Amino acid sequence: MAAEVRPRLTVLSGPSGVGKSTVVAHMRKVHPDVWLSVSATTRKPRPGEKHGVQYFFVSDEEFDKLIANGELLEWAEFAGNRYGTPRRAVLDRLEAGEPVLLEIDLQGARQVKESMPDSRLVFLAPPSWEELVRRLTGRGTESPEVIERRLTVAKVELAAESEFDTTLVNTSVEDVARELLALMAVV
Ligand code: ADP
Ligand code: 5GP
Image 1: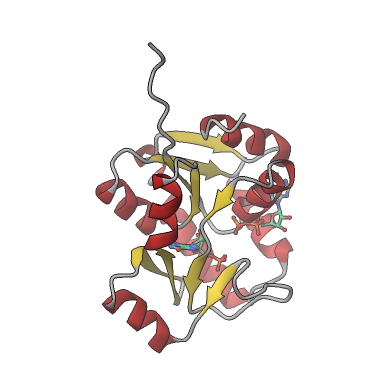
Image 2: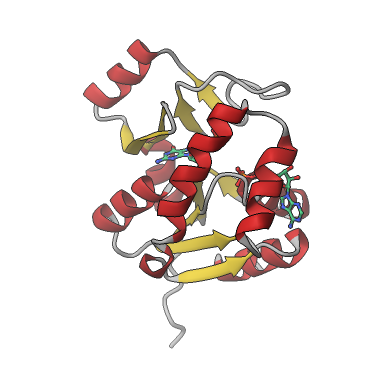
């Protein structure tokens, strides 16, 4: 008898600047059918970011409403902004038997593990601390103050690596994307 193949929720986390968005973008280029949850955030869009694509950009009041109406699977405050995963879309995909990927912070990953213990938590680690600083600074999208704030949070996130089921080191974007797809049983 064939073993039951049940798609799992995969959560990708890791410090700001480690390359999560880059890896996910590459993965979707190779496999456009992989579904990634689009989060809501109170952060302002970076140049090139579009509403409904990278995020649903919402006001503080709108975010309050999402929480009050129970529309978020999880949410967290990260470096001065709030971020949350719309619940319905994720549950619909899982019920339809499709693999689901969330790219969220450590606090969100912990909430998901608590409410959905079956989910797989993947930690994306930098090759070194110096390289993480280089990437976050090199991206050029945040002010020095915001970079400092994100690096302070990054130390806490790096210390939580053992809470995750799997660690992938982001040396090569292509390799990590392939490993992630294999974990999600897409390839
Ligand atoms: P995150 O989504 O984790 O905050 P990004 O995907 O925005 O991080 O990546 C931060 C910076 O690091 C970007 O400038 C990106 O081009 C670069 N980067 C990502 N992965 C790698 C890698 N494997 N090697 C070198 N640079 C990378
Ligand atoms: P950024 O502002 O760089 O896009 O994201 C900052 C952090 O918020 C990243 O660690 C990212 O993974 C996380 N994040 C994005 N969406 C969500 C979400 O829906 N929930 C939680 N908890 N974190 C999120």
